[in-house]
Length: 275
Image (cartoon, rainbow, N blue to C red; front, side, top):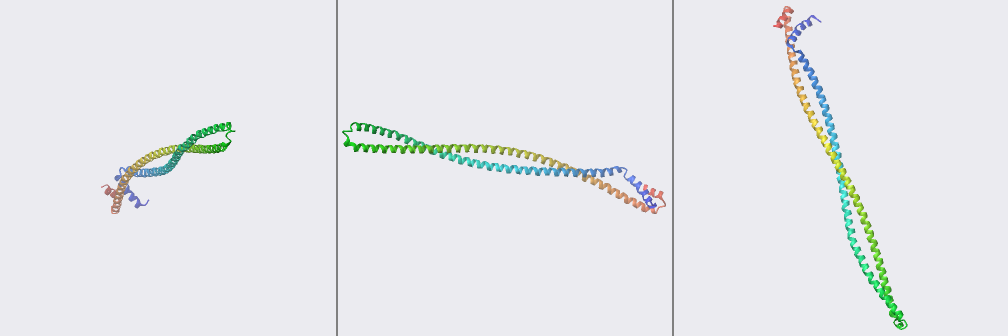
């Protein structure tokens, strides 16, 4: 070390020792400042993680609402199909009374035809008993027979219509039962969709609860961040105050060192400094 530097050290070091009797406070400020910045970084990292979780919760929320919309759309389609099935049911029940009415009319006509047949056969017996005397009335017999066969044909035609009506009745009944089966199947699908809807709703509320919990943690982290920031700025202010004191002391020491060049020696300089 040169003589000039030793001279400056001899002036500055005692002054600094005198000026900063509590110099450990100066280094404590630096250490605290470093700790505050480290805590600040940790808070920002936690904040980023909370916002990432928030985004994931909102994404899940959107997916749940989309599934909800699809379930309600399926529900609407099921109710529309239900309405169509009930309309078909109403038409089948309307047609059934008409078929039963036709059946009743056919059965009412049948006894009359059979009664007429009995009367014709009775007439035939009388006709054959008096055959010898009634050859002249043979034409009337054949006329009666023609009427009998005409009545029989009418009877068989009515019977055929009765069977056709019965077949239509059974076909309508089969369609009715098929529609009923489809109706119950649709109802089962409707209830299954409703159960899925309620399950999705429960998951939605669970996700919302997690979202609000994450938000609360986020605001707590933010409060801690602002608290840490306040402490950081307070520490910085104290640090700058101490640093400015140090600069002021250094300037004073340099001024003393300048004056010491004009003094007679080191002892005079220290005496001036101590003064």
